[in-house]
Structures are given as C-alpha cells and as structure tokens.
Amino acid sequence: MVILDDYRYVPFQGKTVVNKKWLPIFLFGIECTFRKKWTTLMLVGAWLTAIIKSILFLLLTQGQLDSGLLQTQGDRYFSKTILSMVYAQLPWFALILASVTGGLISDDLKKGAYSIYFSRPITRKDYFWGKFFVTLFYSFLVVWLPVFLFWTHSFIFSGFTQSPNWHIVSKDIHSLRFLQTIAYLSTVSISMGFLLLMFSCMSKNSRFVTLSFIAIFLVGYVLENIAQNIQKLSFLHFFSYLGNLDRIGYKIFLFQSSSPATFWTAGGILAVVTLFSAIYVYRKLGQIIFVGLS
Image (cartoon, rainbow, N blue to C red; front, side, top):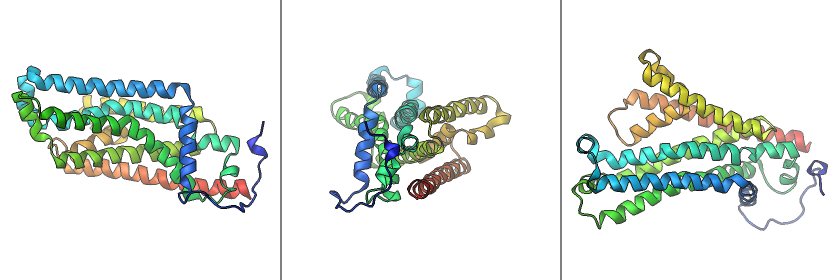
C-alpha cells in the first residue's frame, strides 16, 4: 500500500497525453465522488423531485389550473414554474455539493495528494479548473438537465394539447425565456461551485467542509423567513445566500415584484462573494504548491 505523504516532488520528464491538462483532474474527481454510496441515492432523489414538479405542471395546465391563479399569472406561469423548479433543486444541489464534493481539495490537503498532482506538468490553473468543473458536472446533473428536459417536454406537449389554459401558458415559452434560464442557471452554478471550493480549501477535514456549507444554507433559510415575516428586519434578505439568488432570479425573468435597487444589491453581494471565493481558492492553491513542494 502506497502512502501518498511519502511522495516528494520529482520533475516530470515525459510528455502529456492530452492538451487539456485539467481533464485528468476532472475525470479523477468524478470517479472518486461516484464511489460514495449515497451519491446515486441523492441524485435519484433530486430527479424524482424534478419529475414530480413537471407532472404537476402538466396537470395544472390541463384544465385543472385554478382560474384565479390563471388570471393573475397565467401568462408568466411557465417562468414561475422554472424558478420554482430551480428552488426545489437547490437544496439537493447544496446537499450533493457539500457531502459528495466537499473533499475535492480538503482530501488532497489531508493526504498530501497535491505532491502527486504538481510533480507532473500541471499548473495551479489546471488544478483549479479541474476541481471547479467537477462542481459544474453535478450542477448539470441536478439542476441543468432537469430544467432543460422540462423545456423539451413543454415544447413537445404544446404541439399536442388543445387546452385553453395551456394556450395561455404557452405564450411565455419563447427564446427570451430560454436565454434567461441559461443566465440564471449559470449564476447558480458558478457562485455555488466557487463557494464550495473555498470551504474545501479551509480545512483538511471534509466533514467540517460539509457541515459548514450546509450551515450557510440553513442560516440563510432562517434569515429569509425572518425577513419575510418581520417588516423591520427585511434587510436580512441580503444576508441570505438563497434570498439573494431568489431576487436575482425574479429580476432576470423580468418580474415587477423585484425593484432594480434590490436586484443590483443582491447581484452585487453575490458577485462579491463569488469573486472572493474564486480568488481565495486560487491564492490558497498557490500557497499549497509553494509550501508542499518546497
């Protein structure tokens, strides 16, 4: 049995097989995370949630949609269903990121595996993007794929139904909504991916990373509920990660309930957190390389 900590830096004299040096790191990250027993179970749970949401949408648009609801938001019902589907997938996405990919960097720190990575012609940038693309992979499975399948069957279904309710709802299905969907999903994936990697850099204990990342969302959920129920504490919206994502989503889909000031404030906070997370991870990796390989 080889102990990773016994490895020392040896300059690589060979040639790389692929030009994309981040690809082996990405593939190995996927392989390691799928070894965990609960990965498949959580992915199945996330998909069941999305499937149930899609079925309910189709049932509601087949003459069973409440008339009052149809009058108030019928022509925006599709957009709000997309948002609600993303919100339903966010807890799954956060849980999978925390428990499955929480050790992406912390496990390497614990086992000294960075000595193996950087003894090859792999740069800090290659390592950085390889790990980040692992988080994007799970974002694709948990959030992107269910939403795009929802788009697909909505287009297909619209060609076969004669329901007057669906005729009203289908007016909201067009190219602008598709671009808005991509913009919002990109915001969610990038921000949560970098945030997870930042927590993974902070400790060699992957369980601490998992609990810390989940705590961010639990605290945000509590703050969001307090802000909604107590008018004087409405400013707590901006201290909630999920609350900021909520406001950004509403404004991206052009709902009037979100003011421009609220959108720019929430967007600015999320942008600062995301940028800080990315810079922190990149600088931390530089320190690891310098200390570990010196």
